[in-house]
Image (cartoon, rainbow, N blue to C red; front, side, top):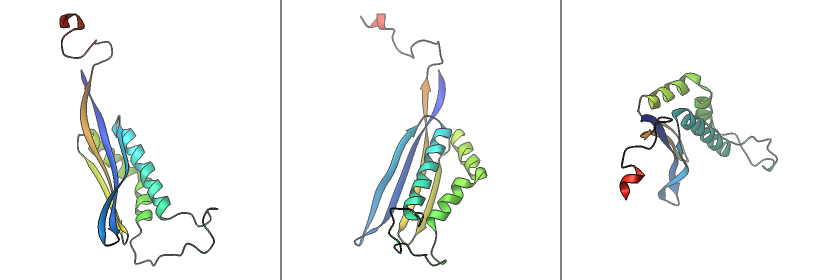
Length: 142
């Protein structure tokens, strides 16, 4: 049997809603490799960045709806987009997962905190052609 590295990916948003701190799961996936986990995480980071900071030229947004935020306000969408475009950050995160470590990314602004987390989970699968895994053969169960 050989080990593969499954990865549990979770994306959570936390923030105040009507005076109460609320935690909302935005995405969950079990990826079959660190590469697939990172790909899913990048897609989710881009999706959340686009939801928080849509293109003002989008046809579905009425003209004048969006206003530019002050530069002193933390810019979560810019942080997420920057992380997605940083090949060194991607490589370091992937290497951390391959080594069995977890990876976490967080970004916060006035509306709350966005948490991206990947936890590797060791799983064992039989090598191709090695037959069934450990345990009794079906003929032994009679």
